[in-house]
Image (cartoon, rainbow, N blue to C red; front, side, top):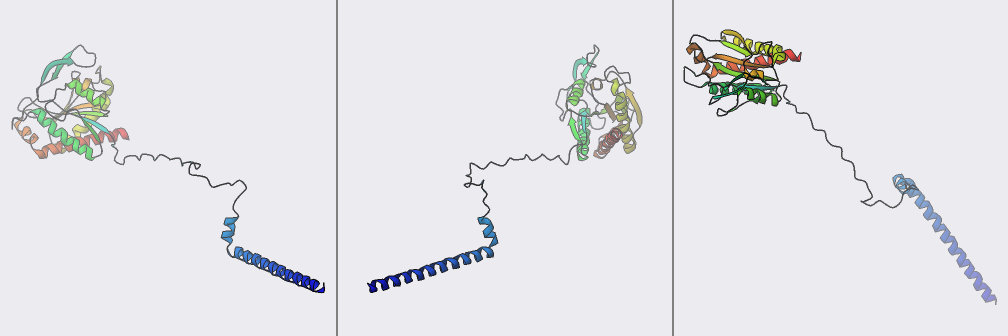
Length: 290
């Protein structure tokens, strides 16, 4: 019996020792974990950032797609400052049919006349007009203008009135006709054709058209030294009467005059004319932009 009691006491002693060891190990582990958390505050923060509203990680279908903001289209840096319509007068074949001289008019005029012919090399006026008009177009575009041509080849059939209508529809701000002339062999010089101030069709455009004519003619005379034949105002010009924008027809010299025609047939003189016309157009727009 004493042996049993002694054995029991021995077992209780061993259990007590094991309990002490277990408690001691638990305390040591807790202290170690506490030190590790203090040494890694970021990790501690990551482990404690969950809020009561958070749940399982969202799936790809739960996440809303970002809304795309449309990228604005940049304005062109070379936007044209003005739009100009050029009409190289005449064409390869004349049209003897008639058209009303103006919108709703009972009076009629020939749709397209034959035009002048060079006494130097037999060049037809329609060819010369197109050459100079293309030079003007190239120079204007180099200066930032947008240019509309009523024709860009010889073999067309477009009446004077129809050319004005094309210019209107193009959105151009002015219409400049480019032509040469013919007459007495002694006649020479430059002049501008436009409507009269009392024109029943485009009288309201007279002031602007006259300003355009003056700007171009003055520059042409200064650049070429040609004779000044002034202005020819008429209410019988279909190209003028159908225009809804300021319009002038520039007669740049006489192909029937040997001395003047010799100049008209040189590249150098044509280039002078083209640059002067562009300078005049610049002057006109400067005056209305102020």
